[in-house]
Image 1: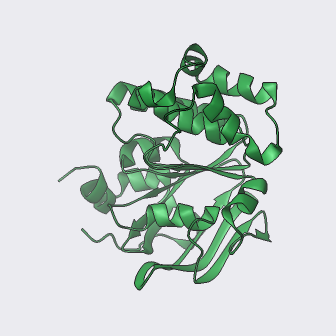
Image 2 (image 1 turned 90 degrees about the vertical axis):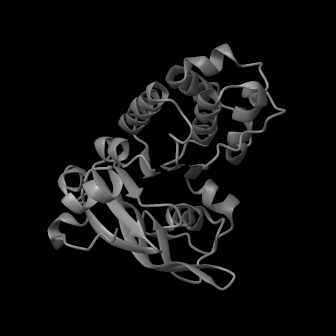
Amino acid sequence: MAVETSVAPAARETTRPPMLEIRDLHAYYGNIHALKGISLTVGEGEIVTLIGSNGAGKSTTLKSISGLVPPRSGEVLLQNKRISGRPAHKVAELGVAQSPEGRHVFPRMTVLENLRMGAFVHGKVDPADLDRVFGLFPRLKERIGQNAGTMSGGEQQMLAIGRALMARPRLLLLDEPSMGLSPILVEQIFAILQDINKQGTTVLLVEQNALMALTVASRGYVMQTGKITLSDRADRLLRNDQVRKAYLGEV
C-alpha cells in the first residue's frame, strides 16, 4: 500500500540540534538504485525510527551512514561534519556504531571477547564501558565466558547491542533488533533501548515492528522503494490511517 506524503513542514523535522543529517542521498547496488534522494534529520538525544516493508531501503540507509555502502551522491553529516565517503572504520571513530540486522556476533568468541571487539576504536577496553553494558544486560555478565554461537537469539541480540555500545557511540544505528524474538523479549529489548537513550545516546532505529518502534520513538520516517514518503511525530504516525493499514495490520 502506498503511503502518501501529507505532513505539515513544521512537524517534519526536530527542533533539537542535529546529530545526523542526510541530504538528497542516492546509493546503488550495481545498477540497482537503492536510495533515491532521501533526506532526514535526527536531533541530539532523539530516538528516530525508519519504518517500511522489506526492500524499502531502510538497511541500506544505515549502511550508507556507517560507510558500508558508499553513496553515489548526496551528503551524510554528523554534527555538521561530513562523513559520507569515509571508510567504515573512520566513521566508527567519529562516534557512529551499528548493531546490524541478523546480529552477526562472532560465534566462536566468548561474550567478553565479542564485547572487547566493540571497543576497537579506543584501542583498549574501559572497565566502565563493560560495567555499563552489564548494567543494561545482566544476562551477558552471567554468560561472560560462553561462546556467542551457543546463546539464544535474544541473548545474541543483547550482545550485538552491547558490542556496539562498547564503542561509546554518539549515534547508535539499530537494524531490526526485534527480528526473530518472542514478544516478551521484544518488550525487554525496547525497554533497554529507552534506557540507552536516556543515558545520552542518540538512536536511529530501523524496525519492521512499527508499533513498538513508533511507541519508543519521538519521530518517524516511512520509506518505500528507496524514498521517504512520509515523516511526522511518532504519535501522529500511530494515528495515521494509512500507516495503520499498511504497517500496523489494521483494516
